[in-house]
Length: 119
Image 1: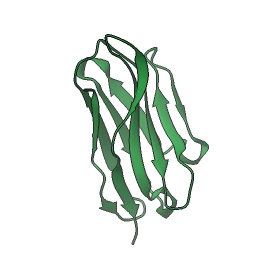
Image 2: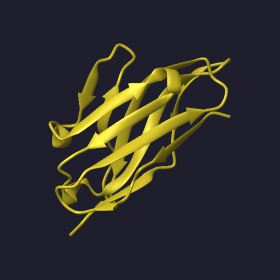
Image 3: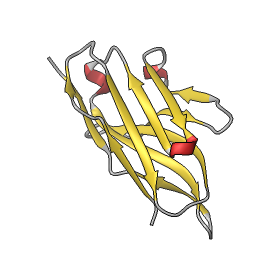
């Protein structure tokens, strides 16, 4: 019954900015690592950024210095601030979260949100 829903994807021009959001809903007791991945047509899905409960973060090499991940664990929400967007950032962006239900801990994925960077 756990669901992740992304929002904020859009068509933007190179150099523009977007802020993606992902909210987890349903019945669960704990959220661990929350992360963003992306996948462009013909490409493998790749890690964009991850945010751990400790506050630590890590980023894919291609987005370091441009993207910032943040989380509000109390609101079961993770954000991705995307600045200085490039055409190479065009992809479907997926939210992933490690979630504990009453029976198990497992990864959940959202359905994705499209980000297109084009002039």
